[in-house]
Length: 310
Ligand code: FPP
Ligand code: MG
Image (cartoon, rainbow, N blue to C red; front, side, top):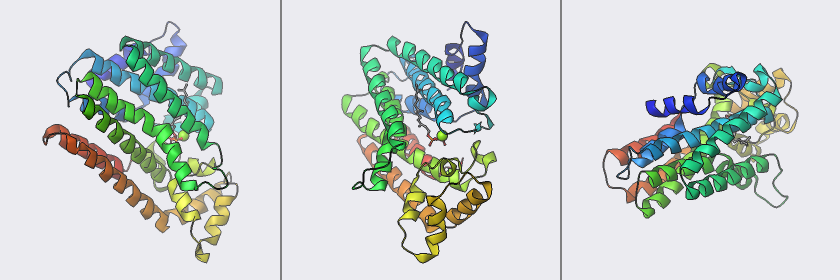
């Protein structure tokens, strides 16, 4: 991971000093480096885990992710990211969007070094990621189940890149094809669990834990699993919560009241239990791996995602 970190800093250098500053802003602010870590871990299932291509693939997924955060904060009008001002808050939307584009271009350049198959995988991943992000802004059709729609969104916007992180790891680590498939599916499910945990934290956490402004999803009207579960309730005790959720939550007092009601609602536990069940499903896919430290680490990785508090 130290090598990945050094490589990342080199890759986001631009001839234009301001572009380097804007691109380094969120990278330097922190981040869990969850996706590159998964690339490195998955690579350990094969004989060439220490190859340069593994490091390059780890940079590709982190840069794609970082790019998407610049754009995401514009869409969400978010003020905070990784405990720092978001790029749109520190500069403006134009800077944030173009810096995201710059990072995505850098990621694409690096992917070309990995060969045509990697370019194809990256392009397909990005298609799914953007489709998921767009789908989130659309209402599910009248006959569609809102929770199913939401899970499709999550699989697209977050599961896709984390699936590719595991797949790249297996591919460039030299693992056999059947392991690639199992790890890609594992990655997609762990990625979904990661996003669903993140959405639970948006309700449950304080901003000094998450580095983001709690309640952003609610304020922006972005549906998340606990909200969708609470909205299904027919208990009259939930009428106030449902009324608040159906309204505009731009007002700070109304947002606080909604957060308070949701934090105490059984839908939170139900959502957490769902996340744990997905992590178990992901871990079961690892049975194709021999028992040992790599499998144990990948199991632990799924557990950490399901129970994370930041
Ligand atoms: C986080 O969602 C957002 C994503 C996982 C993907 C966002 C993707 C785009 C905006 C398209 C990117 C386009 C390019 C060119 C890179 P969230 O808002 O639920 O998470 P948060 O709580 O971390 O903000
Ligand atoms: Mg966001």
